[in-house]
Length: 457
Image 1 (cartoon, rainbow, N blue to C red):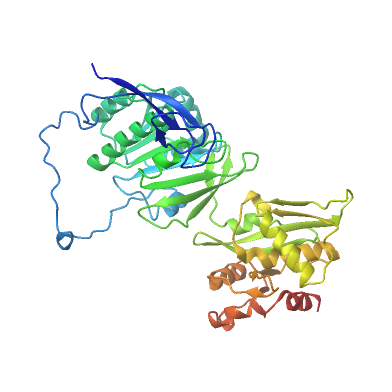
Image 2 (cartoon, rainbow, N blue to C red):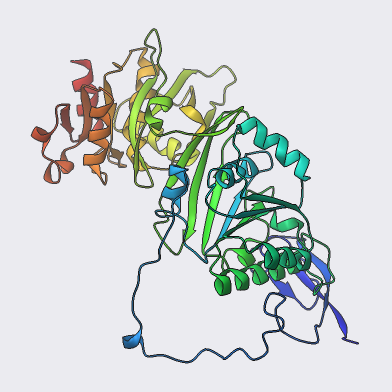
């Protein structure tokens, strides 16, 4: 009988140690090591490849002899998913999708499965019964005879069904619920997640069937066992958003077959996930009356330009110590902008409470929003309204200068398409953009003092 041994795994990053240690040397997390029982198998043969004893080993080939061929992708009916995957699903790829519970991961991929009636898809759920999944499908008002449901957590039984069904796409919901008989630890442990993912990776590469793994995230906002899973899979997608808001963002974290700067935007509705083809119109609130402290900034998320509404509220501090509160923006960068406005703009904000909000529930780290945020703060402080026909795109330096930002033509084109009449950009962008090519008025500025002067004139 094989000898059984125990190993300590970090539940945060997946690192292992032969003995318990208080602080993980990999992720610096305290008290994250848990003892797990790991059996020593009598054979290293994978479950999926058992019986293939006479398979020939791979042979070394000169790089000059290898023919470079583009992967033949097939597109889904979901244009946003196609975008974040780099143009469609790559056969034989292993894709990991992470997100908070209840954010809509299962809904999204059930919708994708039902939207491909010409593909045989096996949807494996370890959390819900087929009846529960059927109820969700009826709410979506979508039907597909080729979408097969399986409620199972044993990886051995799943592979038996795969050999009988021979699916073209496999969806696992979720990877933390699966367990392999080759590992003695409980489902969801690092050793089980690693072993099950390894088996599914072997299946995807040998059968050329794309596999989607849905995974939960930890309370810190990372996929459980991230260092184990992220290195094994081809693509990592993060599904994020506030559960109390209707909008969701599908963001690419890693992609071996495309760009890692793409994102897709959805709106959660009673009938499933609705694709948002023009998010700028949603992120800009349509108000009956104009208010102070509200400006529009031109941002870039992935390869997509977005016009985002920034809201600022500045009021006298009633408790002695002024508050600095941000939603969807880096608080340290806000403090830097406030210091620049005090030093270079002559404002007295030391005794003022400052609240900043990025509308739509987005989290933005694009420095091109600096100019929009600075103008919104001054607008609220001076109680002066900034026209809703004006937008901004510029980074602010410590000297108060407005610095150039990348892809300025895409930002200007998006503002022009949405009907804005003016856009303020840095003078340094004049070398890369021809203002005469646009109908919108492009205002070139050098520093924040010049911006405030032109806005007040």
